[in-house]
Length: 230
Image 1 (cartoon, rainbow, N blue to C red):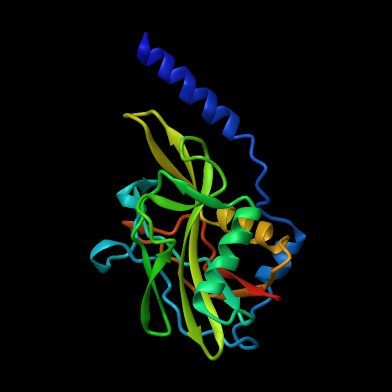
Image 2 (cartoon, one colour; image 1 turned 135 degrees about the horizontal axis):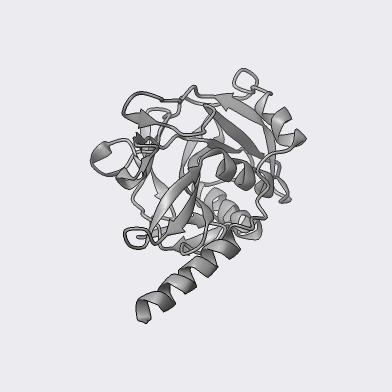
């Protein structure tokens, strides 16, 4: 009886969470993605991938998608040319992420890193089992890890990897991969509505993999570039 109750509970949550309010794509996002700002903005060399334990590529904890291992791309870049210190840049970003509906949520893997201007940086906040997410982990959610910041030519640079996951009780409670683009677009457009940040375009990192064993799913190889405006 207990198993049936748990099944009904999880199924109900999953069904409700599927009625998404995500802003996944629209004409505005299409315009941003077609505007390459790599030559007009001072952006340092950044890693193409999230890095996990033992300095290996993050692979969505080994969960397969269409019978292939996933590789987690960097799909968001944030530039802050207004903050006077790294703590100030972090505090402002955390505040606006929360206002945009992406809070620090428990129930996610942690300990991720990334490379900015040839230096390795940890995710923020560097707490165990915490990531930025728009919903709880037991329903379909967009979540991501933000890495940095690196000081580069007077600006603080963050990089991030966002993805969408859906819970399932097949073979026990776990998550399945849904999308990279859906989470990237929703996070970027929600942060774009804040008073402190605006999307300025994209950068083509060309971080697409599709081999017999490894895939980046629906990722289009582009990172959305967001800049602080105050």
